[in-house]
Image 1: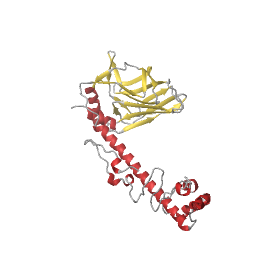
Image 2: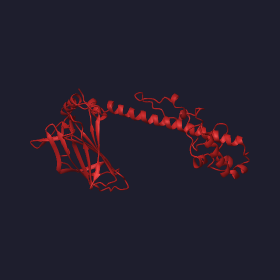
Image 3: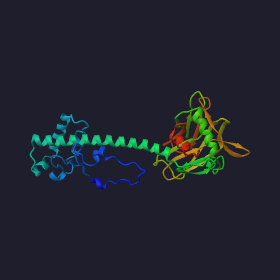
Image 4: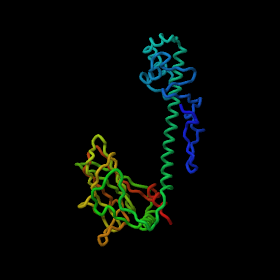
Length: 330
């Protein structure tokens, strides 16, 4: 158990500081007991394996009658204690312990308190993780840096894989000011949060279809997520990605010249890309527009059935969209 002076606290004034007054499990609050590394409970005497020569003295209840989540389940606790006594009778006698109702009650109380305290700790940690997720999303929106509106942005951003080929030059760029205009139109004309199209596998092909709603929705970028079970994946796997992306200038069909990607080590791909149109053989960004009548369709081949393919359409209030909008210098 760490002392308070051993808990690291950031000295950066820009960062939030932990409020230990609401984290009693961090510093041995009497209500929770003082947990040690071996799970012993240091209240009302020390009952551990060393006293009776049996290291399983506190884990036996999990093996017999289960872990108690409520302190009122006394009958089950007593039954578990009875089985525990029968199983470890020799150890008790060797240790000189009296097989009395008081001994059994003590064991029951300790186990029930320990289980209840563990449940409170798990709830507290779960809430803490939830709060951290919200906090991280807020930080992403506020702390993405700044981008000058006359600087250049690439059409593709890839993580978890290498790009072998693409329909246009992978280094193609466009002026960020054009991106801002598309974001403004998406935000004002067709605001929505996001749509996630889950890929369906059939005959070796994954198909993810974002159908939207009856009315047209604008979108600026798309995020393709591909993950494969590491037991089924191969490092040299070639991922073939094609699709149909509806835009205000018509459908962008990716077929004859597909995206070809190769997995990196973790078999987890995040691919961000923006639709384009060719003007005098030069790629220029174009605002996406889709609905029930003209859905976004993404198809992926080359990966095993033990995989997952998702197509995300970030809306006007999606964290990524808000972060990109905040990053633009006015």
